[in-house]
Amino acid sequence: MKLNKTVLALAISAIMLSACSSDSDTKDTSLLDGSQLNGSGINDASTSGLNNGSGINGSELNGSSGSNMYGSDVASSLGPEFSDPNNPLSKRIIYFTLDSSQVQPDFVPVIAAHSQYLIANPSQHIVLEGHGDERGSREYNIALGEQRAKSIANTMKLQGVSESQLEVVSYGEEKPAAFGSDESAWEQNRRVEINYQGR
Figure 1 (spheres, one colour):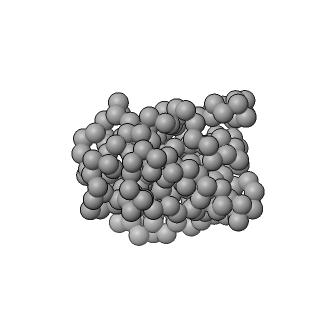
Figure 2 (cartoon, one colour; figure 1 turned 90 degrees about the vertical axis):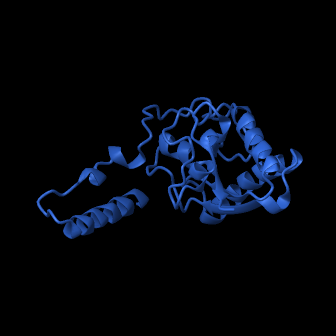
């Protein structure tokens, strides 16, 4: 049902945008194609490896650099290290396995790099946005998203980051990174986004 509502909302948006364009003969209907919705490039919807803690490591997904899809990307103005794909600071999305708030080993260096940056830049502030997939109740997903964000915040505090530099927020299932009711979408939605705020 959520997918149908999303497709309907996207269709209405596409119609409204095309009505506003100066050339009404060229309507872009690419948003109506279901394969365009998640943009993940992942074709494997298997669930193998989910319960052994392996999960996904972020490099497997498009957009793993963590650009903020809900607002301006402040981190791109922080320095070249945030846009260098070889630097762990360029990764600002931490993914989790099903029903878990435990940080996977693949993401420990990413969290450590952000912690070191925050320690070296005490005027910098981040928001840790916790998310979950669509399974489970709204309340459960809000709580799980919060647990995930707090898990990263606690790790950063143990590494020396000041509590005043960290803010935790949970959106649960409300702001999916990928639409769909399959494992490839759920993997992308079980995440915490590290969003840098202006100085």
